[in-house]
Image (cartoon, rainbow, N blue to C red; front, side):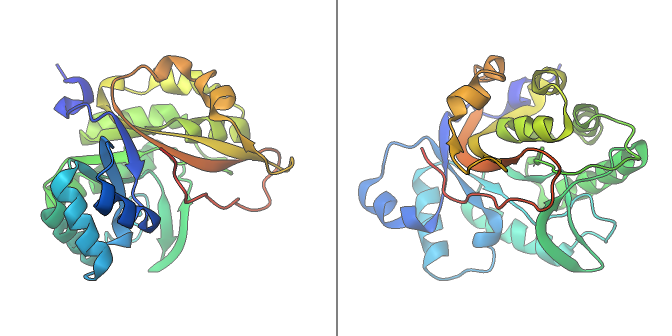
Length: 267
């Protein structure tokens, strides 16, 4: 039997750590349950950001969230990147390390974007093998997030939830369920977001991301997450797992560009 959250603790409500938070946190020690840190923001830093992070990690639980692992790329895994990731983890002792089910570049070039994968048995096997290598190297719990996607591959033979469910089971990894990304992708690809949420293996979900978004090409007004996310995905919100609150955009219609992702998170 698989334990809920793969046996990881229920953390409560977390906040994405940003530099604008540093002084307030150090001076006031706010009653925040935990913090999520963007791994790449600290991997190469030995200045004040790293010092502040280490101070915060002494007082609060932290988890690491990356954007450059490129687990789905056909390039070889970047072990220089993984070594830096592991060194940071050794310093701040995160409860888990996460990234995205995507690829970010090819031939050594980083697009700095979370690009969609072909959802096929071949790509599933490729990703599972790479996840196993990453887990063995990092020696810490490893979690992957469903990204929002604006285009897909005509050759895909699996739904995204089938791909993610099989990936998690075969690689024995955790899932970070981004509820907003589910909704954004459901709008862009015309699927039922509730079916997605019902179909992933809930016992493997160790963290949520929850956000509002801006719907384009309509006027860029922030859509309240209560109406756009809590209602269609309301049954999922009661799951007792980690939750981080944020903001993103949603593309409606034929995509001509990828809207920018908001970086400011709110608690």
